[in-house]
Image 1 (cartoon, one colour):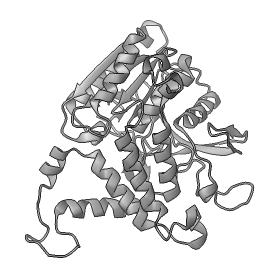
Image 2 (image 1 turned 180 degrees about the vertical axis):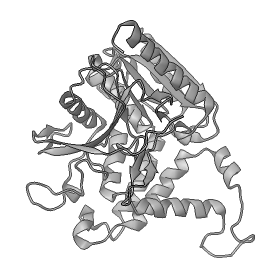
Image 3 (image 1 turned 30 degrees about the vertical axis):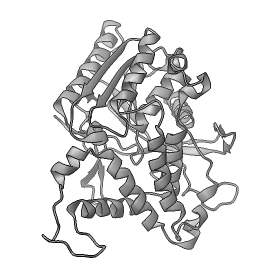
Image 4 (image 1 turned 135 degrees about the vertical axis):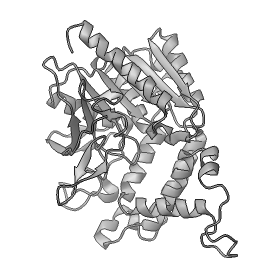
Length: 383
């Protein structure tokens, strides 16, 4: 399969204030995004890809380094591109960086127009619904009245589902992968432990660490280590690391004895080097708050009654963070509403991270679904 090659991010300024679900208002903001493929004359072939917690608008292709050489492949480069399951020879794909992120769109690191200083802790709490409303405004600016599909994995899947609730007529298909209609108590607990690691780091300074020229690295490291454990299955950890020792024997101390400890610390150090602590707090809270059935007494069937899209849902049997039961719950609610639903449950060993992997069965399910989307556009003369 061909590569998209080097891609370039774009940015769009929105001067009008954005009213947020919390009641706060974001006074002017910018969204960073990338596009791949060509928008057709009918503007009917656009697909929005929503990103997960630590990802961004950089979905596919490569960025260029200072010398112009390709580096940093997109986080879903195996999924999106010429001849890939989401084929950019057919579809115009958009990746948008969410508000509150640290990868270009307005977030805590950016200056507050009211003070000229970084927002820091004063950046308002944002929700999945707030992100979707901002994405819809970007779609308006790009002249896209309706998406052929909105797609996402994990937190991105929550956004795709929210699209069907907030703007039911603006997407024809909804692709939700390794996601959930709400977090379990256990998931909320994991998120809070991660946040506490950041909030109690002496270098956090109440969220205004930028002014002190420091980064709460220890808190970020622990937060990432906690999170990363939940992304992998026990079988995957056992196969990759088992109880292997780095030096061949116990060291009788509190340093690194096991290979799994070394791996987690490496992931934590890497994450602390590029991610923003305030962004981590914001995004995990958005995860916690997402619960479309809450307004309907917990009845997901009633919550999804206004949806109009066709759905593809994919889950993975070893994903214990967003278990298949949660996807089946969404499927049942959609079936109760007589929606057209395709569901695949893949026996892949990679846990939650399976949605980023190259499992052939998984890729073929997505490829087949987008073939159906494309066939429908062709039959209508809108391809």
